[in-house]
Length: 172
Image (cartoon, rainbow, N blue to C red):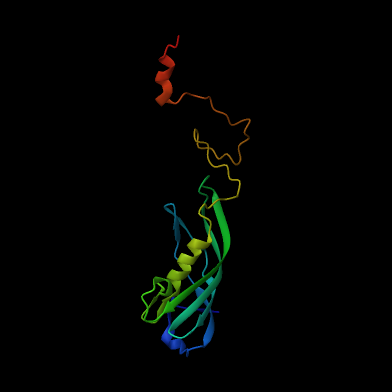
């Protein structure tokens, strides 16, 4: 598997209409940002890219496994997530139809790195958790509720200060 630039020069593939080519490449993913937190893929990812040349443009299919590491969104513990990315794009020549124009193809160059990054973001869940049943942090003391025994982890219930004045009401 070749470690390639993230820009693929489509003209150098010399595909005639109706032809296709499969490329196996290694792509370094930029860190993903979710909810203001950076999540990283520790290694370059092995990408399988299928390029075909239908009449008047290109069709692409990109597949790769991805492993993302970073803090859990609920308890801040280390978390890792694995997903399979399978994305498709079309870049049609001489069209105004947005559905047939790929934002990743400019002047016969495919920005594989940017496309892989965006496809990885779409492949992972919106909530990045250390485990499906993560209990998060205690809103009072900040202790992780994943490891705390519920019977031992109780706080005195206090009245919300915004409601304290209601205690002064005299109802007769």
